[in-house]
Length: 136
Image 1 (cartoon, one colour):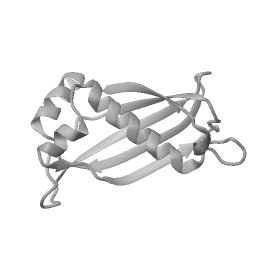
Image 2: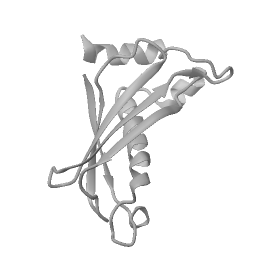
Image 3: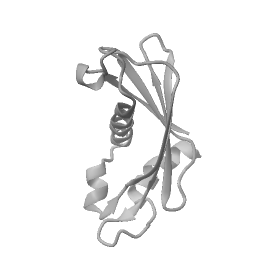
Image 4: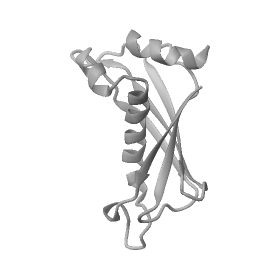
């Protein structure tokens, strides 16, 4: 299993009138954590796009357990539980506050697609090679 952690501080603009993180703001947190997890492998979304591969989100779920509040330092754990063998990749996210309380869990499915044709493809071999050591 591949797992990383990314920290994000809740900004005032991300909260509602009660100081609670608005539900849709978890998705940019997941996006930032996903991008950082790939960056920690020494690879970036920009690298993939230069290869002609994009990764649109095709399915997203989030379960909210406790509120995240203004100025909380959140830790977003990003996990890849299975090595992708086809066109899709499934990321799992867990959001914790500084007390290590689990606040939310998310699951996102993205497809690898050729940017010019919008046809499904497989993970670029360069990225696959970096993930493989976590699944041996």
